[in-house]
Image 1 (spheres, rainbow, N blue to C red):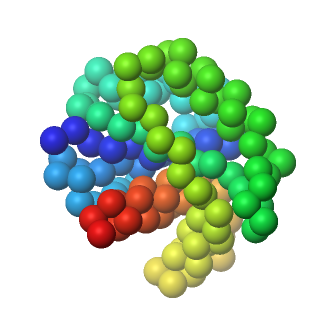
Image 2 (cartoon, rainbow, N blue to C red):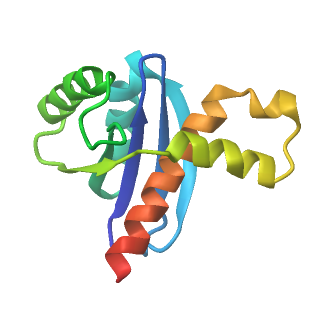
Image 3 (cartoon, helix red, strand yellow):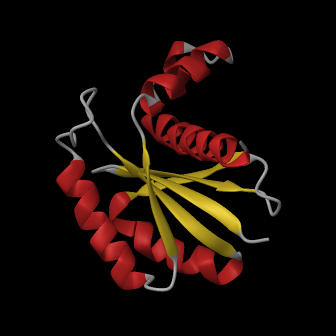
Length: 138
């Protein structure tokens, strides 16, 4: 079974999470500089069997697109151009950063460790992916 990969794209950094081969567990993979994410994915896709990619869709509480939506949309265009055969699905990413930060607190990370924005991005992608998997099962 191919893996599902989730991308939490940001202006500076992009958090990436991936499922296991059975699509049961989401795990943080890495955080990469956003300008290198396409190259990272090209390399990763040659090594791993990925069948679907989730990209966060930033929304405001009202459901309207957030101010970062144009940045994400530009990335989606680049992604589709680089990987035209890859299945792409947009998923709501509201609250993932707040949930990631709370997860860091709950797991006992010290304040200095919680300031690691790259880790927050990776955890956000993992939460987004695990939420998708949970909804897919029911």
